[in-house]
Image (cartoon, rainbow, N blue to C red; front, side, top):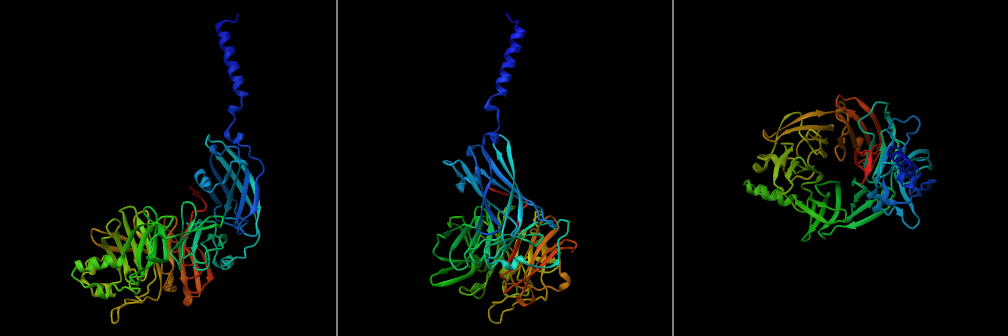
Length: 501
């Protein structure tokens, strides 16, 4: 008979040996049955379809891939993660065939792309594979982006933005890297002025119809119609709102066209969640201040020209750019006007005491004129492209304001208590660049900016420039254009660390 100590040791060894030989101890990655990675060409050379065997979709946490930079490039590699929820919504897993299929986007055209594909499972285990994807040349509608004039090439130092989303009048949004290489474009729709990249896809508002197009990363397009029949089309920007997207819309009400003066928050199905009619808002505020608004708010005329609208979660507000007049801050819930910021030689300030009372005083630098593309920095300073163009549609005999001979990115510190604004940073490029319409300015990394001049040289040339707060240019790429078609807006897109939910 074994002693108690010997018996206990024998039992422990038996349990350990049994555990070592059990299939239950293998990881989910080992049990997944992943074999060869199959691939097929996508709708454009920037996309490929990958697929492989997968035993149990419920075990999957995410799929991640990186694309190595081509020789001589400095942009950080494309790195994209697909969460299981995103893959599930796309029906990426075929339960009967036990295979998963998904797109990889951000490939170089006409290149042998080297990918690292990592499949992560819920127990923390991973399966890693190396995949080479050879692509052909790009021949679609966005060929203008394939051959930029390189005025300043990017070097090894980071310019603060690695990838750029180009909103344009030619095709879908286009992605460029900081080396000036094209990394994504779709085929339809034919304009992306009103567009953004959401948590799961590109979204494009139609310029000719009340349609919201969802453009998947593989190029597939699905469209939803706005549920309010008053709205006729999108215009200018599309931005993230409090719960949905902020859409700048034209409308037809009682046979009268309301031009570029209505903002609505919509969801991805086209349902209108909330609306701000700037005509109604300003009529009410001006009457409350003792002014007659009839020669300011003029239905049927582009009196406001909304060209940018963003939501500021810091204080539950909306910041809206009226090219004709000013930047206006509204309370998100009530629509009440908190302040106005603009050229005080224009009609709105000169002729209306009610609006003068709402104006911020510029204590340093220059006021916004004809501005575009508002954004809020982490320290709550306001960034915009300061075009410098006077009002185009003032009433007959009313002051149109100043016309500058140059345009700049501008950054403002606003003191709402003191009712003041200071231009705390700008870059005037020796006052040599005038893009008086469209254009954009966004901060990438702290103190580093991506500036798009949409309509230089009498609307024939667009330039993408990365510049830091000291005025040092990190890259400068030029493209031919007609009006604002080539680069309406250029916005940083974190394709070097993107997660689709």
